[in-house]
Length: 114
Image 1 (cartoon, rainbow, N blue to C red):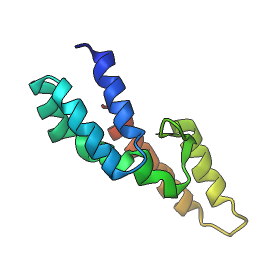
Image 2 (image 1 turned 90 degrees about the vertical axis):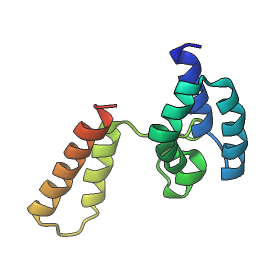
Image 3 (image 1 turned 180 degrees about the vertical axis):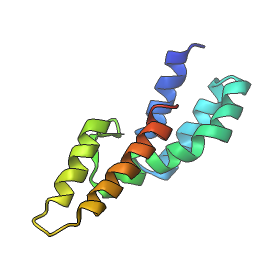
């Protein structure tokens, strides 16, 4: 099996509509995965997929492609942060700087290092 197969199955797990569907699909996928990938998935990926699947984040209203369950890209995320801070409320510059630093740290540690 190749990378595309594993990536496709993980994408399918991310697109599940509820936890029962996830568990059913996971059981089916785990049988088709190699033992090494199954172990890697359970140890390193499962928690992130569980917390990022469509059913887990639908209530947050952050899905840009609802049928895939993929959230916004980095540029759109920064744009959303800036727009949220502009809600015509007075904000201290330090608040904006802190949130941008937090976003930058998250982006460089999580998004670019996977």
